Image (cartoon, rainbow, N blue to C red; front, side, top):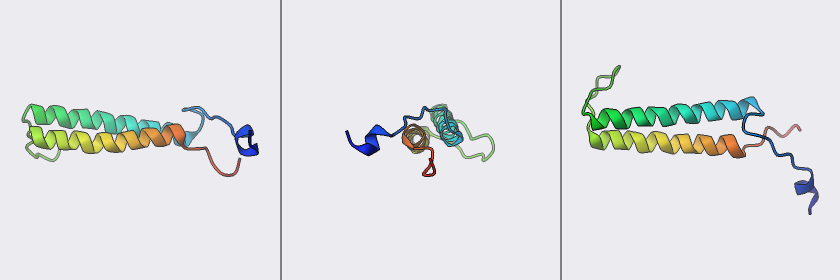
Length: 85
């Protein structure tokens, strides 16, 4: 075993404020994606903007926000707390 792997610390998902924040951002992105998909499925308008949605724009919003949410979730899981430790 090398020295780097012997001394590496396994940090949990909720150990640092960065991981907690990235996990919260991922959750918000996933929920916004569900909201966009549901709004597009129902052929409704967005609440604040007033843009009329259809199934294609709803699914595009779902895929874009879920992509960003999954990236934020991977960052929350695998990012190390910092270089100063």
